[in-house]
Length: 242
Image (cartoon, rainbow, N blue to C red; front, side, top):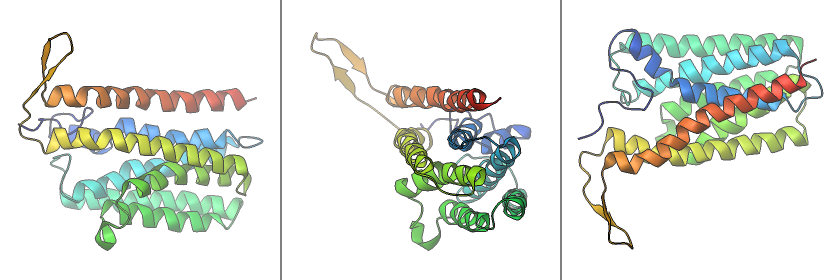
């Protein structure tokens, strides 16, 4: 049967545990780390804008996007009422937008364009609008990888540099890799009800194949990367601090 847990970080359903699960903590921290990585390419890191940008993406991705995703079919099987999820989604986007406006007032009005694009991507991707046009592997890489990085670099410098574009592309590829690893894992945990088979090795040994064995390697890779990316971001930022 399908796994009781919808993700390796999911807790048993009910109460505060549902809110932990719906935040997707390892992935949220992973994607917010792109903000810090991109800020490190600036000639000088402005700590205030780094912290505000990280908080904005935590609200937009960690809270709003994940609340909308849970509303769209309950993939994590939480018991959070729909009204609460809608409240979290709206409040998360509103908070992210408010932080963006603060940056636009004090740094560059072009940040308003980033606010608009980010808000659109959160809603269009997670609610699968336009027939799921934006709910693809490519848009996942762009929305959750390249966009946070490019936004962060722009907030720091007020312009888009070649270095920022290169880092944004790298973050997009890392996010694509995450997607390629997590998609079969999610399918095994949430939808597959039976797996049967075996591997026959060249020495004659036989190994049973089941859902746990099929997801073991990609899930271990996801766990490792969910630690590696934040540590990389922290190291880069620390190296740039006075």
